[in-house]
Image (cartoon, rainbow, N blue to C red; front, side):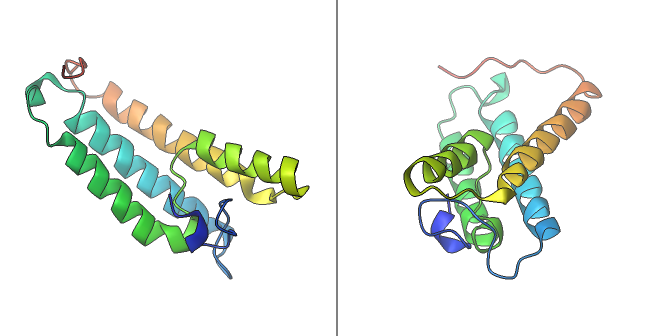
Length: 130
């Protein structure tokens, strides 16, 4: 993602200089929501079986997130990525970033919102393409 683009040192995600917490939280939430929506709608439906362009759609989404949200929040989009990098920094540099919660709360809230929205839709075939 865009760790070096924000306030991180190139190895660890952080908010950009002067970026308020709410803006970082919003950026992570919106781009995680966008990424998961794209993945669910292009890569896991039977309707797109045989179409190999879903990787391009996902790649463009990740690239756009890195470009647009990278300077704001680092564009982590995945709690495991943010947590792993921050814990590695704790172990190897003995420093801890207190904004680690942003990288847990925003993706979890985005996933919860998508789950609530998908519960109101008719069921789709969720088999991945071969």
